[in-house]
Image 1 (tube, rainbow, N blue to C red):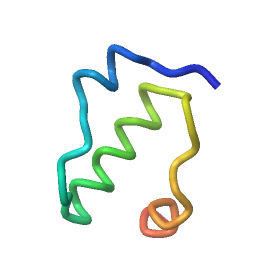
Image 2 (spheres, rainbow, N blue to C red):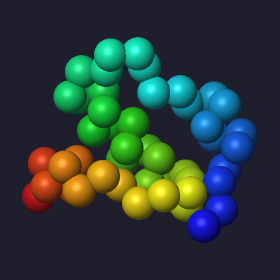
Image 3 (cartoon, rainbow, N blue to C red):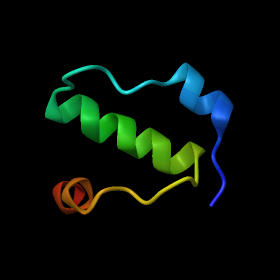
Image 4 (cartoon, one colour):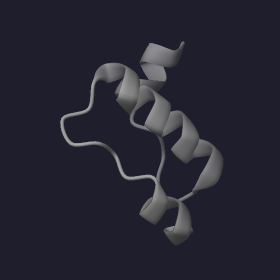
Length: 47
């Protein structure tokens, strides 16, 4: 898996994120970086 270092540097997960922030971050991450899969808990919420 390849990390998109530029994306990660510009898009840090907020400290103590709300559920909405976590979901939005992971959706954007899935579109822009292939360093890891989206957590199962987030995937379940998107269904």
